[in-house]
Amino acid sequence: MTRIRIGMITPSSNTSLEPMTALLLAGAPEITAHYARIRVTEITIGAKGLAQFDAAPMLEAASLLADMRPQAIVWNGTSGGWRGLEADRQLCAALEERTGIATTTMTLALVDLLRKKQMQRIAFVTPYTGDVQARILDTFTREGFVCSTSPCLGISENFAFATVPSAAMNRMVANAAADRPDVILPFCTNLAATPYAAAWEAQFGIPVYDSIAMAARAGIELSGGSPAAITGFGSVFE
Image (tube, rainbow, N blue to C red; front, side, top):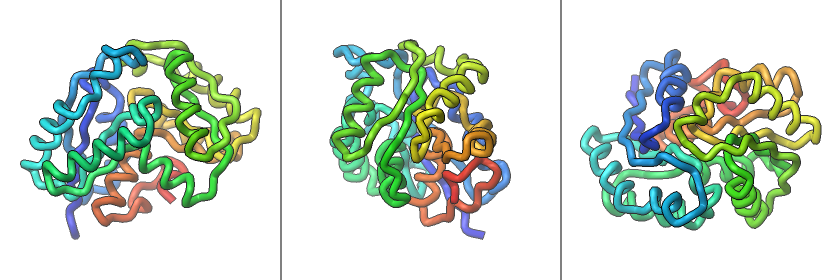
């Protein structure tokens, strides 16, 4: 059995993605995820909020992860949504140059999968504020996607995203589903949507690609593994 080690760079105030990723990988003991944190406490589009995603702390985190010799490194955050995909591409290039390890981000991997699956009409479900949400929709529109009804909760504190109750997520997903997009995207790696994706798919008949699950898929694929090793968490792993 070939062991796959995935290094994940994680926002410091995120309390969802590590337990949710452990849940995803519980049935695949040959795949393990390992984490390094960068300081992220708010999701805003002002100078302070954007500076959290500068290259320097990312490079330090990736260097630490490289010590345990992962086959891949993933930025397990969604900042490419409001900073633009070019920012994520530049980040990956810098991390790969520093570590020599294949690197991607959740957002870049998501765009690649949407194109592979020929999903054009997409709906976002996020906890973010309206101005952040608008940036996300603009980013994906410029990449050639059509964004349908995409509800958000208006929260900016990163820690608080993990406290969003399932009832609120259910309402947002139902709202997004009413417009019949090709896919629904719970877009936040601190939104604990992972356990509900399969049930939402069954309820609405629409694929649901949760960000935490998407980051896990990205790491597995980049490491040379098969996403099909993960079962029970929706079509994102098909």
